[in-house]
Amino acid sequence: MAADGDLGIEARGVTRRFGPVEALRGLDISVPYGQVTALVGANGAGKTTLLLILATLLAPDSGTVRIAGHDTLTRPAQARDALGWMPDTFGVYDQLTVDEYLVFFADAYGLPKQERAGRVRALLSLVHLEDHLGRPVHALSRGQKQRLGMARALVHRPRVLLLDEPASGLDPRSRIELRDLLRSLAADGVAVLVSSHILSELEEIADRVVLVDRGRTAGDHAMAELAGASARVAWRIRSLEPERLATALAGLLDGRPSMRATALPGGTEVGPLTEAEAAGLLAELVRADVPVTGLAPAGSALESAYLAMTETRR
Image (cartoon, rainbow, N blue to C red; front, side, top):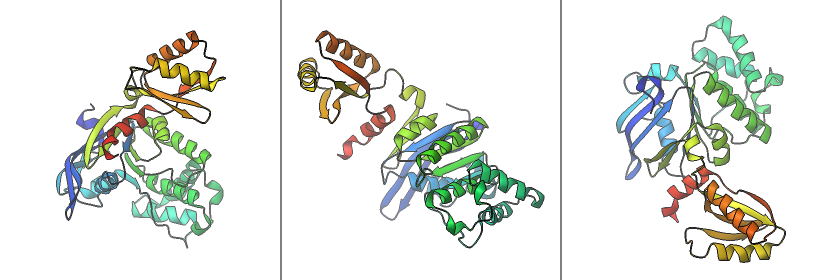
């Protein structure tokens, strides 16, 4: 675990109640500098409440929260200076142009006047909106407004970045560019916390994942460890003879209650299996003269961890 001085975000024992509803029940989270940390949980798990508390927009009932070393209750202004915040939904000033919109926030953060024009151009280039300089905000698509929101969050060069569903509304190319941007920011030493329901994309972006369930921290994992050779995931098998594959799998999986085979269009899904178990199963199918044409993971280690965490909700 990172030392306190290496943490952009540190929250311990955070609770928050809304009337009879306990949204957070002693939640802990740490977000190191130089890494992207994914925040994963089901709807109602407490993610949005946590992000609002981290953004200093909501006070916890108890617990401590520090942003860049600053206590959010006793030094909120210093915490906000270090923080970039991009909520799931945010308002835009439709009557402003794209550059006027960013200049407004640059002014709010106290950027020197002589730096604002250059900073705005750099940000628009960073989020690939340079062609929209001088155009009204209301003319932007949802995805373009989302990219403008990212530029807004970065206007004051924050050391800590909070993102709630940042890929919402983005086309595939823009999602790839977002991934590259977040990895670049982490490489520059920024502490990035991103909440998203798109688990496959988080697995490509994040260094760490914090699993949240029912207001508590349910797990804190390095992504490399979670997705290692010991990870158990479902695998998709394709064969030239699907019926023969199904018959062979029925025999091979007999007596293995932890594994199951499900026929799907284009193949059969088997698992959960580790990489070594999948390789062994393939060898057994080949020995049984099953003409296998493909074997590949059908899911991800992050999906498996999430499903295991939420299994009791079924």
